[in-house]
Image 1 (cartoon, helix red, strand yellow):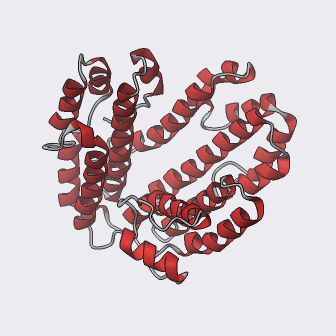
Image 2 (cartoon, rainbow, N blue to C red):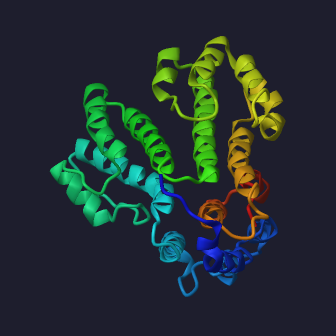
Image 3 (cartoon, one colour):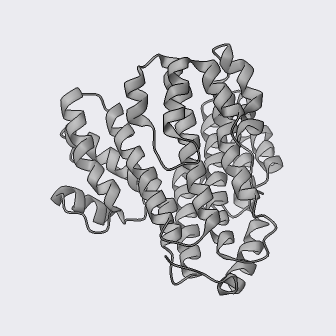
Amino acid sequence: MVKFKDTDFLHASSRIKSLERKLLTHRQLIQMIEAPTLDEAWKIANDAGIGVGIPLEQYERALSENLAQTYDFLKSLSKEHGFLDLLRYEYDALNLKLLIKAQAMNREQVELVEMGSVPVSVLREEFRLQKYEQTPCLLAEAVAEATDALARTGDPQWVDVIVDKAMLAAMLQKAMEYKIPFLHKLIKTKIDIANLRSVVRIQRIGKELDFVKRVLVPGGHLDVGALADAFARGMDSIIALMQGSDYGPILEPAFDALRGGKGLTQFERLCDDCITNVLNSVRLIPFGVELLIVYAAAKEAEIKAVRIVMASRLAGVAPDLIKERLRETYA
């Protein structure tokens, strides 16, 4: 198990603390929503260092580049950076899902995102050869299973289920290589939140218990058996389980609406707030490896929030509805 001393990150921590002050605040995101024009909204993001010199029409490229640059910078602060790479497995998983589905449709060209732990060119070649060296092991193993499931069922949802489950398992496996209790807590919370989202969504659409058992990811703080049992008994039991967990106080505002068959958007937002709550738990630490992890996660949340605002405004979504979609920010 890799161990770090807090003093290993004295210089890095001071750099991070300075960068944290430049993250967009909730108030600034509201200003982006309420800005009279899209250009003015985009300028607020520019002033925070996002998309400087890149036109509004290319905001997606700007957001992706900003996040990729953040990870490159953070990796430059530590000789050992596997604990940062695991936060990028989400994009490796996304790229593999795109490749699997494109292959099934006989599409030779598919656009991938450049933010994963594995360079896109390498991932494409490993997928083509079905020989994986840089791709995280558990994700690589999921490719054959997901490909087979898609061929048998014709349902692309199974690709998402299998690869996403492998992604979370891979994140936990990698996290446990490091003696960083905060990282363990963060990844276990991500697993719990993914599982809670799954049981609520699946309960809403009326799928069977066997499907839920296939979807749930072990390794979190919440027992998957208890989650499956609660699902089998219905939404009231799912809510009771959430109320008795550490996530209850944050998720509580959505419970009445969920009981009435509504409130999914609010619940999804509050689920993300559970992750933010973990990040905030180390806000006052003066230095340490935790600060690199928190900044990476906070930057992810910032980019996601800007994407929500810009995409919603371009689609003509009402300001009040955009505000409902906003998550709590770290800044």
